Image (cartoon, rainbow, N blue to C red; front, side):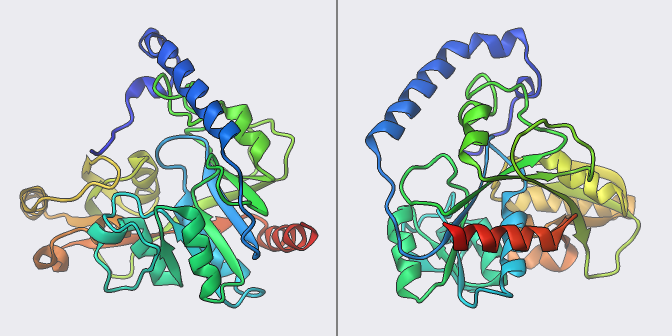
Length: 319
């Protein structure tokens, strides 16, 4: 099942208040989970990049950027992910020939940039990485999980979306009370408007922005589509370089039908538009249509990259 975030998750409303009772039950069950589970020490450094909300905040491109930054010090970095929507339980090593139906779409993106392990059981996955001589594991997600001891925990926040209506699922987008996520984190990564202090948080904060890159030269006028946790972020990034004449949003991790792609191609041809989507979406497009579609690569740029590198390495060494 694909989830689309309801509109009332953005602002407190009467509709979101209706679900508050169920949110309390959700929090109660989560508290029990935290009490009965223990973290295991793996024996190599583990960095967790997580978020507070259900849906997109920029975790995956942040993990990709962190891997690039930390390659200066660590030579065998593994990204560990559960491979959301993938059928294989793992643990297994993802390669570029892997199928997104088996390992999940985000795992394939990570595999483009380096060694990637998919495992529904994070503990087994971490030991798998260790057996492959990993000297650093970066977890894509897992801030709320209590299974692996994390040496360093980052909380990623989208500047525009923030914590939504600041209510816990299902009344809002939060996986747990926002204070709990902040307390768990050693540092905060805010993706959005550099230098603007929207959040008052007594933790180290690193600011970053998203940039898109399109390798092929395409028309200025585009039909943009995406299936992300936060499609608005992608469209806003596209607007900085292109004129969006038509767009379509799909649920996060959407698997595209031929009829959907054919409709997009037909409209684009009639209106004289180039077609643009994210790499995550492009990987799931039927092969016979890929030559007609372009993808944009999302990259995170940190305001103070050197400071981030020094923070991470000193923190891991200290712990």
